[in-house]
Image (cartoon, rainbow, N blue to C red; front, side, top):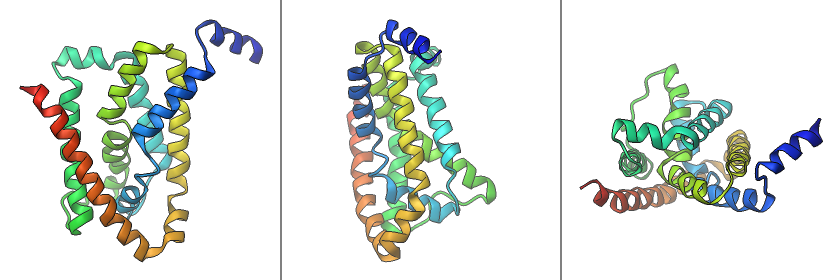
Length: 204
């Protein structure tokens, strides 16, 4: 049975080389390891992060966009550039929270912990404009099955990192986390500005 499944996938263009390249590209764009301080900051704010919910939402967004994303965006007249600019605003205000220690996104109780797993974790952090743009580029070069496998592999890594966030938090300590939040807040601010500046010109 397994051999038949593998044979079917191989006949549809399964390539370990393409899977490897696509996986590395998505891993670099998602940068879930580099976003650990941001994840910890969200956890401190909302009280809890749901790894499975976040991974599931990210998987749904990425796979959905891979198949029908461009068509839906074209139907409602919204492009990748608009998504990128919208995401840059979210990242910008999150960066200000991390750097200045202020509260912009208000805590709305128990429901906010579940919402945080989707916004901003699943979007725009994981399944953001950069990831979507990468999927469009990969779709033009690689077989669909290889991109799907690459997405699944990256979502698995996302889930593992989210599960291990508490362990990382204990190892680094409160002081280390505070320092990392400031440093990565500045980096996140720079990313938000770059994301905005590189896409806003396409809107006019």
